[in-house]
Image 1 (cartoon, rainbow, N blue to C red):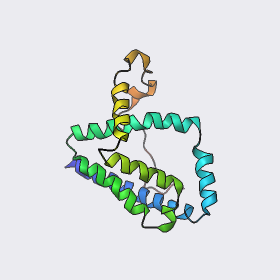
Image 2 (image 1 turned 45 degrees about the vertical axis):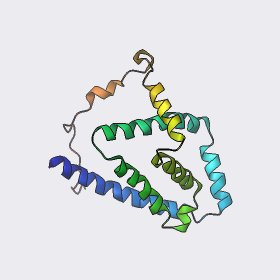
Image 3 (image 1 turned 90 degrees about the vertical axis):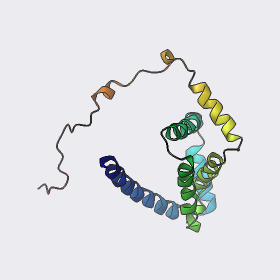
Length: 161
């Protein structure tokens, strides 16, 4: 029951974040298409984006595999991706944003288990599982300091003068 309550509150918070995200998409979508395209290419055509995609593709498929192994029906995951598409298309302006179109296109490939994308993604997962541990970086030193116990008392909810 405690976990359900915690995740219910997390989901409420995430819902607010998503509402803000789509509001920003709507605002961005009112720009001229030329500006939207230049912004997309200018901000994203970089080696960092290519490297990020190489890391992201197997990460997403591995995450999907992990949540399915934990008992989540994959249809619920695919439903969440479909919701992204439906929310974005509620606004003509948001649907014009090129990065939205890229994410929507990718989500469509992820949902379609027969899409050739899965040959690439699953082979990347397979290859990443065979990287020897000695070639991977160690855990950051701060990792072992993470705890569920509070380490400081904040001022949330109090008026500070």
